[in-house]
Structure formats: structure tokens, C-alpha cells
Length: 389
Image 1 (tube, rainbow, N blue to C red):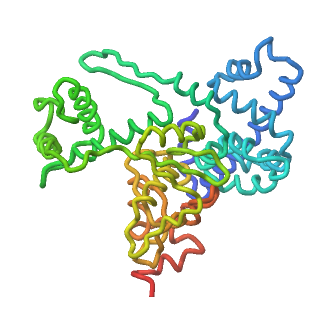
Image 2: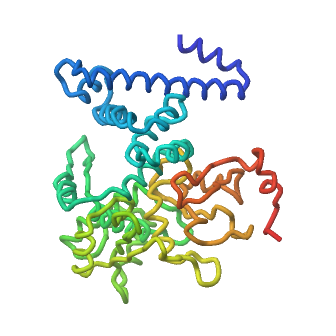
Image 3: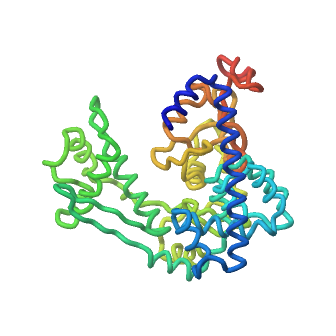
């Protein structure tokens, strides 16, 4: 019985429970490798009941087609990558890591990626795959064909879902972020939730088409704080706001926006169209000339580089904050190697205000580790009570 197992584990010391948990995870990975090896041989023998191997695995194991496809592709690729395969068989690599590693590694780089992959978060590996993948105009067109926006009634509420591709998605996201930020409360008033402000922004955009006041919802639908914020926004501005599209032009990679690779032709079309485009290249310094303030170019680059919180295992992608790995009050620098995006929870836990430190180089796919400052090797950090001498 599961409840009996829980009661047994509740009597174990914490350290023993952690070790046993890690052993169980490692053993699970080993058995996963044995299973996908069996699937590979059955695939070779065409012993999949007349079905495609992906469909057969999905039906046989009761898993999603996307997961089954990843397992089949990993099993096919590992024959050419013996060092990565050995690490996976030892339980040192998860399937989420393997999905990206088999796309990044070649027989010549097999050993290097086997070592790096163990320390890399799956989200960072997936980001590197996207940055180094060549995108054709045909793929860009296919993304556009996959766009959708649907809505339906559920009781008194209108429900919605959608999928907006690459550049259009960046524009939509930028507009909503801007409108949500503009809905600041009146002085002394509390903030509405992000979800409430997002709903107000959407209603306001829809009402623009009939009333012409940018982003203003119906007054009867707003709180006093939101109404005051909208009134402030409705004042004429000297310079109209427009989203800026930040494009990373990597030295060895396709152009990308928000971590999504683009076709070169698409970038050129944007520039020719007169859109607000800011190109950031790998050799740009992006460091402040003086002082500690984060330059706009660096801020935009880091937001594009880190679409999710960089703490390994965290996938939050909204309300992210820029964090200095080494606090500026401790002598930390401000450049692309010293800052990363964190979610509010992890930002509050990180030094100098919390007991955790994010170490390493955020420019490297395996460059970051999240540890408590009182762990072995961090006594020097834990002992610091103020700025570095």
C-alpha cells in the first residue's frame, strides 16, 4: 500500500531518504535505457504490429506521441554516440537531457557532450539546439500555418486558447507586457494581479476598435486603482510606444528572437519593413561604460537569452528579474557573463538576501549551478557580511 510506504519513509533520516531517492531515479533511468534499447531492436525487426515505431510505443506504454517520438529518435541516435550512451546506461543522464544531446553531439564531440550534459538543465540544452538549428523559409511558413486563436463560452465566462508563431508571438507578448506594466495602481493602492491586468489589457485592445482610446477597458469593469492607471495612460505622449524586436545574430548560429531561430530572409524583411529591430551579436560587449546600471541592450539580450528562470529545473517564464550572480555590493560586475534571469521566488532566495547562490557562466549551456551558501566550498561566501574589501 502506498500509505504504508509513506509511513515507512517518514521514519527515515533525511539524508538517507535523499540518497535512496537519488538511487531510485538513477535506477529508473537505467531501466528506461533498457526499454528503449528493446524498442530499437523491435523497430529493426519491424515487430511493431504493422504500426510505425512511434505509434506503437505510444499505444503500448500509454504515453504521448511526442514522448514516444523522442524515445525512438534517442534510441536510433545513440548507436553513433557510445560515450553518451554509456553515461545514459549508468543512469547519469535523463531522457529530457538525451533528447537535446543527441541533436547537439557528433561522433567527434561525443565525449565532450557526455561530460557537459550531466551538468546542464534540459531547458538550457533545448535552447542551444534551437540556436544552432538552421531554419528554412519553408519551416517559417509551416509555423505560420500552425497559428490559431479559439474561444468558447463556459457558463458566464469566455474561455480562450491560442498559438502565435515566432515574431508575431514576440510582438503580442511585448504589447501585453507593456500594457500590463502601464496599469500601475494609484499611489498607496495595491497592485491588481497579473492575471487581472492581462484580462484588462485584452478587453482594452478589443474596445480600441470602437472607441479609439488605446488600451482602455470599460470603466464599469475596472477597480479604482486600474481606472486611475488608465486615466494616466490616456494622456498624450510626446513619443508613441512601439515594441522593439531584439534579434540575436550569433557568430555560428541562425538569427533568433526570444530563443526561437529564424530564417535569415525573415530578419531582412523586418529591417526592410522599417520595424524597430535591435541586433545583438556575440562580440558585443554589452557592459555599462560607467556605473552599475544595466544597459538597455544588455537587459534586452539577457531577456532574449533566458526565456525561463535559469535555476536548473525551474521553467517559469513570466515576471522574471535580472539577477547579478555576484551581488554588486560584493564587488560583482555587470556583463553578459554575470547576470541571468530568475523568477521572483528564486530571486528572493538568492544572495545577498537569501541563502542560495547561482554560480557559473550563464553564457554556457552547462555553466550554472544552484547551491546553498552553507554547503562545502562556500564558507567564504557565507561569512561575508558586507561589501568586498
